[in-house]
Amino acid sequence: MGLISSLFRGKDINSRLQELRGVERAVLLDVRNADEFGQGHIPGAINIPADSIDSIGRKVKEKDTPIYSYCLSGARSGRAAAALKALGYTNVTNIGGINSYKGRLEK
Image (tube, rainbow, N blue to C red; front, side, top):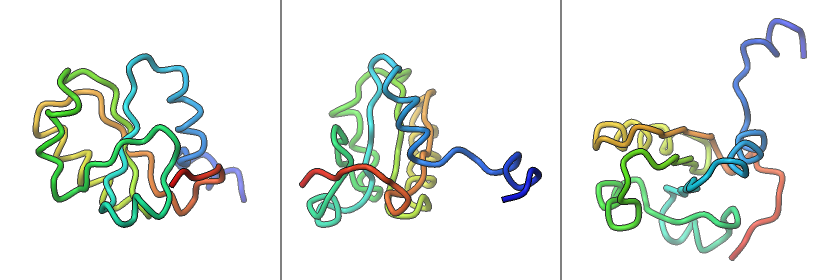
């Protein structure tokens, strides 16, 4: 990888998860559907499918809670992050897709 491409490339899911470890009250949010979540998810993640994102208030009450969302590739989690911001959540980060995750999965 060249210097220019490394400068413009964003952080991947693995480096974002390292960041998350030091963030107080952080929520790791898997926005894939329940079947996908059941097949394997990042340890500590909660599941709220992207098409049900408006129900997040049941699990995350504080609007300033740091929320790190992911899905399979990063597309749904990007849309979910935008929806969360529209719902008034102020500290939302799309960390991308589990397809790039290097750690172990929980079932």
